Length: 466
Image (cartoon, rainbow, N blue to C red):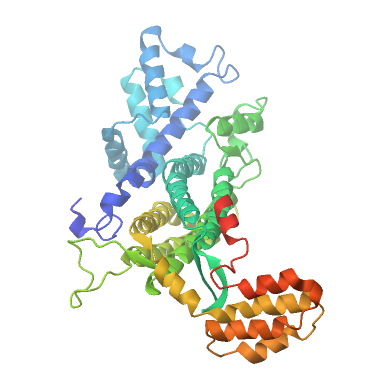
């Protein structure tokens, strides 16, 4: 494709970054997953003596059996030539039905291998299109999680954790409501994101992906009319689990997408946490807490030569918004289907690749942005030096400890809304420490030696232990 003429930026501007995702979420990939499921189902039935005495495989003449078995095995493993997807799309032009085109292609290939008519009759046996589709999408989601989402997220967590450890003791002013607050460390604040992302990582990793193989309305109607004595519910479970998916026994024509919605909701939470990280990093750069490495050939502004913009974090923010919007729509829409099935989920499901692509682009942006920053401890120190009012919390807490009930009010009167220099704060500490009893010698000593740089609680330990 000429990427300059692509409608979607995913296939245009960002195609070098999204190309790996097309292996799992493109039209060709979906066709491949469908073909794999069809081949699995035929192979599964062909080995059951309950379907045909001695199995369907025994129908195939010995000279043709190995080529047919080898072909089915290769298809099940995903070893499918590009010509296969092109041929299936060509067949779809006639059938006007995407899954039926896959069935006809499989029949066409097996006929070329001299498979007998009775064997061919069991391609797509008792299956509805959604039996094939739901399992194809299940395999797609499984591969996207394994090969795209979790590896990138693991790298992000690892990199942020490394920064948290590096900056574990790098004291800085805390900011609540955007205002100066009790000091913390940069490492501890980054460790919060590590903790949050680790939890969501494990939730997504463990998220069940369910599937069904139960026929047109989920009752094995056609299966049982053909083979009343076969335990089709057990077979359905056995088949679905053989694909590495979890069986859903109670369905309509469609698998109800509940676990898919859970998957997307977890991905949306990951997006939101990453958005929080992107905005915080943008803010820290704006405050001068982080500087960005100069890239000699880059341009920050078409008119202001001095600028180095935090574009990686801004691009991440935009792509996270797009990814989350798709996650929300898909997780809401896919839970609803009129009666036993309507087709409105079909077109929506095709956007799963876009959802994951925008997410992936955002993670790449975050990783790139984080790799280009360095902490400016001097700026952090200067901010701390100008924020001695943050020690008011420490003083009033020690006054409370020793029974001085209006300690908070005393500090509020002296500090609220006022610029407090180190000298002023030292004088306030001396004046109020005199209210402490003689037995509070250690508390008085600790109070008088306290500075904003040392008033960081357990922040360094929290960061180091993440």
